[in-house]
Picture (tube, rainbow, N blue to C red):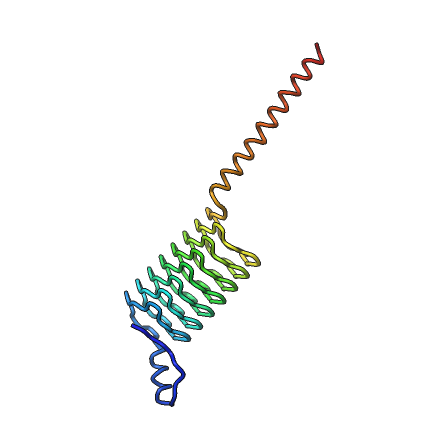
Length: 209
């Protein structure tokens, strides 16, 4: 299925175009919309469970309350899209662009956003429990009151992001290797301290003799 908008040449074609773009409450479960152009489309309350929208363009689209559970949006463009209250549980948004998108109250539990761009996105009150945001860009994003319990943010960019009241319990913010390196570094410091103490004692003993 391929939905593409073009500049309408007449009022009649404009009407037809608007009909194509209004999919409020539509059921598109398992639909294949690879590479589809849905710029400015209205999909409020639509069901796209398990749908494939790889490389699709949804710039400025409205998906308020839409269900995209298990949907594939790899490389999709959702710049300025509205996904308020949308459900994206287990969805794949690897490399997707969500610059300036609104995901207030959205559910992204277990979603994969590896390498995704969420610059300036609004995720106030969003649920990202167990989500993977490895290498994602969240520069200037708003995550006020968001839940990121157990989320993976390794290598993510959070410059200028707002995380006021956010929950990051059990979240991963750095490489495990780095953690091990930090631990080893700490152990080395302790060993050096113990060695220095031993030497001090030896010097003290020699002075007493």
